[in-house]
Image (cartoon, rainbow, N blue to C red; front, side, top):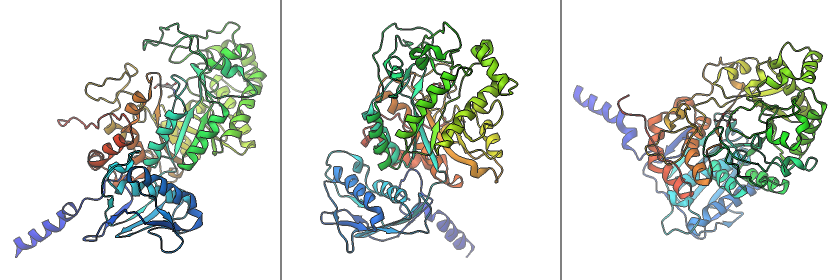
Amino acid sequence: MRTLLTAALAVTLTLPCLRAAVPDIVPRPVSVAEQAGAKPFTLAWGQTVGGDARFAGEMETLRQTLFPATGIWLKPAEANPTFAFVHDATLPKEGYALTVAEGKVEIRASEPAGAFYAIQTIRQLFPADIYRKAPVRGTWTMPAVTIKDAPRYAWRGIMLDPCRNFFGVASLKRQLDAMAAHKLNVLHWHLTDDQGWRIEIKKYPRLTEIGAARPSTPRPFNRLKQDGEPVPPQFYTQEEIREVVAYAAKLHITIVPEIEMPGHAVAAIRAYPELACAANPDLTPNWGVLKEIFCAGNPKTYELLEGVLDEVVALFPGAYVHIGGDEAPKTRWNACPKCQAKMKALGCKNMHELQTKFAEHFAAYLAKKGRNCIGWDEILEGGLPKGAAIMSWRGTSAGVKAAKAGHKVVMTPKPVCYIDYNQLVPNDPYEYIPNNTPNPIWITYSIDPSEGLPPEAQPFVLGLQGNLWAEYIRADEDCDWKMWPRAAAIAEIGWTPQADRKWEDFHGRMSRAGMARLQRLGLNAAPLTEPPKDK
Ligand code: TNX
């Protein structure tokens, strides 16, 4: 009897493993129940899509998503559609409930974003070939499942850097597509830096005429050795920016534009040298932390940056504008009579406090325009800047401090969130910044963005972000390689409840299906690696 019981218990305990595996969805949904023994859903000609008019955009997205690989166009239908979109006000903002049965799919959501994420899950319930852009022969089936899902965090981001090496709109769109497929919802677009000003500003055309061109690039990949080869202006026109913003909006991705200040400003200073503190600024666009920064004591600095922000706000409808703030050495400010006078006038004890005040000035300016401001964690070195959210990159302690004080925070600590760092892929053909701490995918996956925070501070963590700096990225293929599959790990950290995330489980889903999807999306993803077994 005892053995029988033990045997029964063992069977019960192993049962979840014996059942058909939970579908390989990335990020892992909050709950998935398979209807054991139920017939799958098979996509076929003549099937229809319809439902609540609030989801008209997502119905169209579903049609366009399924068509390229399958060659099947769902027909719009008012009565009894195969794919039914139902409004359900009880579901959270980006959440959804999805039921797949033989001949019938029901998508419930309170808002279009939730319905969009249901569509992304539907895609992943089909074979990976569904991601192909050209027709594929095949039988398109989905298992019968019920899924209830919603994200852990509201900010699930990736930062891309077209300043160090420029990439065009087409490159951006393919990354947006891949991000959306993984339910990432923020693109932090780093639009200005020492090596290039990439956003057209009508009021200040020299920013791109001069600042988007460069006299020389640090190459071969050496911090201080310039190749001496001029590069003509490369930037996004306002028309292109509107196109990208609209494209991202359809994918439920918000773009957070970044205008760097006061540091990483060499390109702007090349265009308007009077904005530097020194009379003869050193404008060599080396990589790294450069000493030339915007003069904080010159009214023209504020005038120009406010003019820039006016146009930025008109182009980007999102709630947040990023004002940079990282790596702003105070060498020039310390030696500048105007900055000294400004520091005293504002009652600051030191230049860190002046940087905090500088950030506060633009936070207030953006607030008047109905926008929130976010900056790299250096902006709190001189005290917590009023009205600004913090992007915590030099570890998480700045973020923890800010969240405890009631500031909104996005966690993006290096090295774990730095997807430009070496990922320890054997025989990796691409180059990385030398001497940085390696950041393989299993290390990325290990972060909990809310770790170390008392429960009352946790709501201030908006979420997390992976940063892909581009000093060492020359083309889409290196961008893909460094971003994927690590961005899938970022996506899962941002979406899935912490208690449901296990590296082995993520690795299993990625190796069985996730990697194939990246390949079908046309991405040159790096191979999926694992921690060394002997550790
Ligand atoms: C630090 S992270 C920077 C960037 C570099 C990056 C290289 C941050 C806010 N600033 O300017 O590109 O390191 O990983």
